[in-house]
Image (tube, rainbow over all chains, first blue to last red; front, side):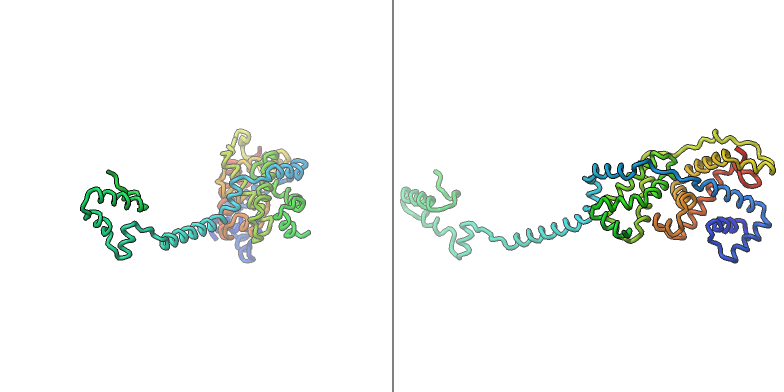
Length: 164
Length: 191
């Protein structure tokens, strides 16, 4: 057995994770290898030194102090709120956006388009300049002007008003 | 009352039930923090913060692991955050641990007096602080706190194979760091 494998087995042996065959194999190697015996002793001492000899205790009134802090921080920090609700809010917001977009698209497609005066006349298959033609064809200038004034007063569209 | 019941009540905001959980886990959480920090007051403060975090995070606990494992995971992450924020890479001062000449075989027994053992412990823990974080964490969990491989797998959320290889590497690194203090025959120099 090579020393590299022996070291791996040695470290596993401290965790009690060696199989029977491996234990014997390691034992044989340790008997014949001075360097690995030294490693074994080093590790043993390291583990002993690492282990807590006596566990210390938290300061007195641990729960009472904690309880007071809990009461103080009942209102969770904004990041905690985000952590708690943020992930749930994302799909909800997406759903809301999709719904709003759909509603907007539908309302755009089905809206009643308002037609201009000329548009209405064209829609009714009438001649849009028929009215104007009669005015223009009037013989007297006074009559024509009066007709234009009365026509413009009847019309709702300001743009058609006569402005001398 | 069963632990699951206590957790469920705590999730609904029952402080008394949470108090029972704190009573059960405070020592373990405190000692885990203490293993990393080596300072009683700071470890106490960190343990309190861990329980506050746990209380407000209980809503996310889905019983996929043991409550204790979940709590230890919070502890390890909280301590890691603390050390990062603090930028506290504890510098080793070897001056306190001046090497002496290797001692004779018959004198080795003398090393085993209380003072030397305590100094050795301090030295090993200081060397531990100089290891990269992931190795420091795994050594603390396994060799100081004595968590099982399975528990470490769950706390750190890593595979059993990774636990095995990382632990092996960490132990080797620690021994290498300790090399100047180890005598040729194995063991420590007299301190």
